[in-house]
Length: 109
Image 1 (cartoon, rainbow, N blue to C red):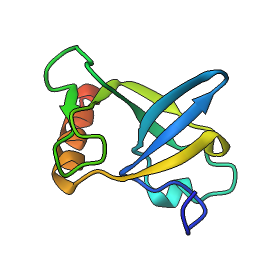
Image 2: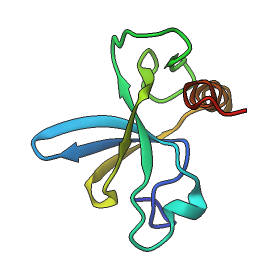
Image 3: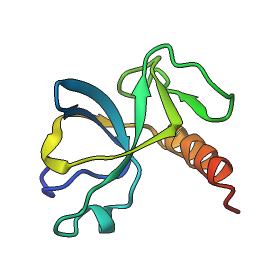
Image 4: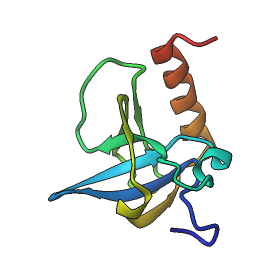
C-alpha cells in the first residue's frame, strides 16, 4: 500500500490473483478506496493490447511502464491485499485520456 494505507486513483500496481499476475490502474476515487472493506476498481494494463481505438490508451514516456496500454473495457475489482507493488502514478494527460475513454465506453455525459 502507500502511506495512506489504500491504493490511490491513478496508481499503477502489480496485482496477483491466484497464480496469475496483472498490472492494473486504479480508477475508483480515493474516498471510496479508503473505506473499510472497499474493493477498488481498476483497468487492466497490457503490452501489445489490441482493440477498439478510443478504448485503448497508450502510456507515454513520462508514465510508469511507457508503451503499455490501458484497456478500458477490461474493468476489474481488486482485493487490496493482492496489490503487491506500486509502480507509480500515470500522468494527468494519461488519466484525462482514460477518463474520456471510460465516459465514452459507459455512455456518460
